[in-house]
Length: 135
Length: 483
Image (cartoon, each protein chain N blue to C red):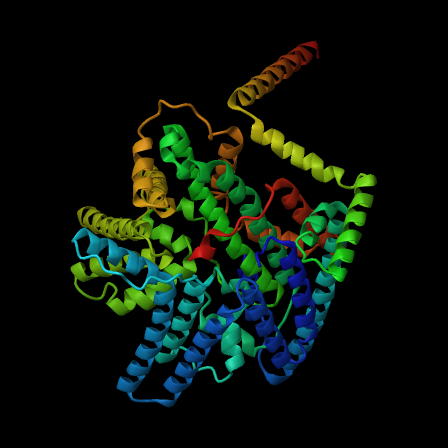
């Protein structure tokens, strides 16, 4: 994958005139890429503020005691409560629950799942054959 | 400051924004990146920033002195002093306690017990990595492979650049310093490679490595006598996957973060568990360390230029010292010895077989094809299991724990506790990706390159959110921080 970056370096032309054009192009490319990623990063911040506000509270709880810190902690808690009230923390909890279920699954359950899948596959195949005969 | 934390996220947001805002004034940008790197390092313990600065200045002055002197004898003396200073610093912080404890045990065993000057020496994080980078710089200047760097700021940034500072990859001056002389550039390629590597690195570390560590590896290695043979076998496969995901995950994030700042690091892992020989494994695992050991230890020792016996000695010594580099413990010594001995044996067998049956230059028929395929598969299985066997010594906290672990592998009578479908699934998933096409990541990055910024933001934000939601609570430190 890192050869993608190499290709770019190897692709630069030589000679003073071409190099100058290349520099201008490079500067423009950089400007665009920086603003592109800056926009993307702010979107990431917004997404995480809304959907992962619990993490923010965990983080600010590690602050030392002080007037500014206490205000930040109080604001973060209020923000998190609001997000919870609006149900924005639910997708996070769903994923957590799913991971917990996966972790607690044992081999018998996996075996039963595989058997059930095989049975339904067999039934589907059988149904397919019947449909074919009907046709 | 660990990569998968909110504070690193904030830190990176500031560094990205300010460093690219300063791109028109390269000196200010470098100064800012050095300050950010020292801040990043000082987050653990600010006192060690002085040590980092000291070793940087020693290496910088050595480079200048080598540039001024023409006499070979003097050059050799200068580089010798510099390497000795670097190794003394590393030796004191890393091996002082180990050396005194071993000496104390030895003296006590022969009835000559003495009060030795024991001290509580704190190991500065990443010392092995920045020491090796410093040595590679002065040796490359000595060998005239690179010109001595006149700017202290560039040497400081080369040694302290925060993505690779604490756990590698070990960056070479010849690769990195020329990048500092160019105008920094950021392209769609940098962004896509950076985003793909950061997300895959975080997933490997936070989901795969952390689950395997907390639910499988740590319990079985804590007391191997309490686990069944099947659990111990799963435990060692689990550790092979955990250490790979932990360390290659860190490397991926480091390479990705550097790419977003406009710099290119070399690849550090290339699907190591698909290696069909131990030699092949070392070409794929921790590539920056194995190439460092080859260029600055194996070749100076004589490499394979001398007699056959000397080649085996050099191979063994290189791996042995590579083992000790990982830490001051007998378990690492055994790990290095095992790898060194097996590399030698493998070389001997390869040469012996080759003398009996030289390689055919013409394309063979179906039988040759099937024979080569079977040989490759056996090689992959054998190499993976040998590496797993050696990992037992690497992971065990003492030699006795490793012995108990090996003994326990023979007893399959106990109940199965840790080998759950979830953990086995994580192991199988990781092993599956060892055998996928090499350029899978490249293809994904080329797809990501085409995304508009809102979609890129959704991908990055959604990916981070999902990893955070899937990962177990808390952030475990990276394994390679202790080295």
